[in-house]
Amino acid sequence: MRSTLPIPAGRLAKGLSSSIVAVKSASERGRAELIRDVVDAYRRLYGSVQRFVTMLTDDRLNFASVGTSGSHSLNQLLSILAEEARAAAFVRLRELKAAIEEARSAEQLRDAIFSDAYSNDLAALRKVVAELERLDAAFIGLCVGHVLDRHSQI
Image 1 (cartoon, rainbow, N blue to C red):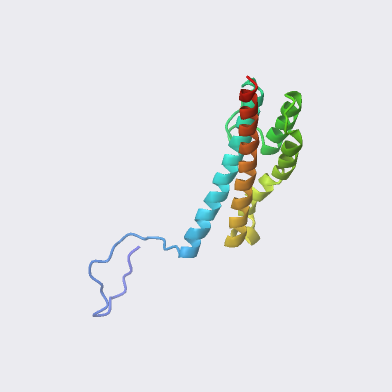
Image 2 (cartoon, rainbow, N blue to C red):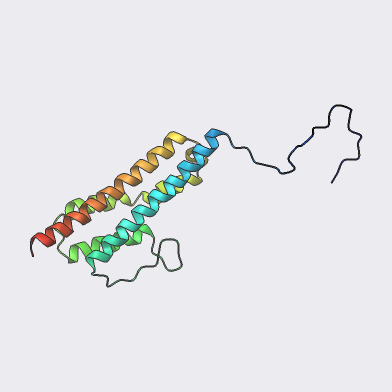
């Protein structure tokens, strides 16, 4: 709605843009990027665990993508991974079990983005990203090690 008040002389700006643009501070951009990094790190971890299970089961199980209808929670996938690794006589089972126990907190780590205390603390978000990436690297290392062991026996 347009104002009907008279415009004081000398106060009319010429050539102003008529669009409204949200201005975000650098800290808000950094926070948004870190929240995205948490979500991305969680998805990578989920995908690594899912591929690990698929590899151990020779693709017997069909998995829906994370976040889709019918997808397993990460904790469900971790339980399936533990069962399948035991059944496959996984050589580094003790290490895998330790990684699985550590990864059980990943959903809580991911959910930190919904917490006022964490989502506004950039250092805490960086720690969450680093922990999720560390867990992902542990599963990738165990999976690759298993594949290399299997191929060396052939």
